[in-house]
Image (tube, rainbow, N blue to C red):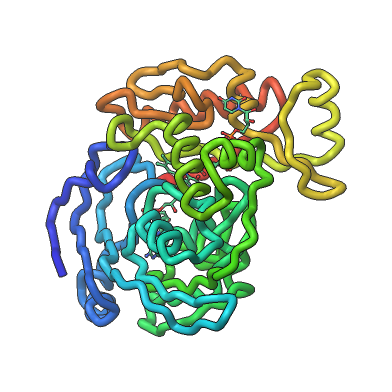
Length: 336
Ligand code: FAD
Ligand code: EPU
């Protein structure tokens, strides 16, 4: 276990915001976490659990204890001819697990290649990309209640997954430390390549294999999204809004080219990137915060931005999208 007082968080959030935590603790095992929960450090302070910091926006210094899991293991817990169940520690880097699965010929998460962050947070955020959500392959989430120390196992129904949503973001927000996740992967996978032109892009690069799908997705992502090591960002700043069919058709009558995704007979999803782009924000800068020149949904730190500057830009964007389209954008990023 490593404890650091007055710790800089600049390397622990991909926005690269300079903020400090009163105390930062990296723990390596469930037993260490159990000891911490009983100690004064936790009882007398507010607590935030972080992963790789790729979906956090620090508005201020954190006047409490920040916990970070370094529980790292990948174990097969059961398998048969068609599936393999793999338990993965919360502290494993998500994309390392994807690479491991692809190397072993296990399908199901290849479309989620190169998403930043760690395995614990993947199950909180219900990460998704290119037509796949991680809840499609989650079997169980193992977690410890930060107040009672009771260990609980959540099955897929308990997790209440929806688009970028889970029970851990809603009614159980901040109450549990995820310690590991069990995923069920396929030995003879059926590939999911319906997203936009994904299938033709994969075929341009070679055969329909797990590794070719992974490499194609990595190439697409690298062409669109800024690398947080070079430009501070947290991926999509807002979620894609889901609107009523009537509201969608009203907008479509003025903008026939509007991209959209069918959700149900009553609902349609609209890319927030398109809405923001239509408002003229792409490539714009306000103070030290900016809108990425290739992807209008990605807000970036132009250098030395504070969390407040990023949040201010986000508010300006929300206001103009609301004024033009009557749609209120909801942040995907967690404000701390
Ligand atoms: P953090 O940002 O550190 O934390 C996220 C939340 O989880 C916080 O509420 C935190 O308190 C909580 N948390 C973290 N670990 C634990 C734990 N062990 N126990 C309890 N609570 C915990 N997301 C997508 O869905 N799809 C994408 O395609 C995508 N692309 C991205 C591209 C870029 C360039 C970037 C920077 C981000 C992108 N994201 C994407 C967002 C981000 O990668 C995900 O939300 C990711 O799951 C966050 O993981 P993290 O470990 O960094 O979590
Ligand atoms: N578009 C614009 N202007 C832009 C960018 C995009 O008009 O600047 C339009 C394009 O027409 C495009 C559409 O928006 O067809 C959708 O764009 P893209 O395919 O880049 O996807 P997105 O909806 O912006 C979502 C996720 C991403 C995920 C990709 C791929 C959300 C909020 N974002 O982005 O997730 O990687 O799809 O599946 O759902 C994240 O959550 O951080 C994230 C990056």
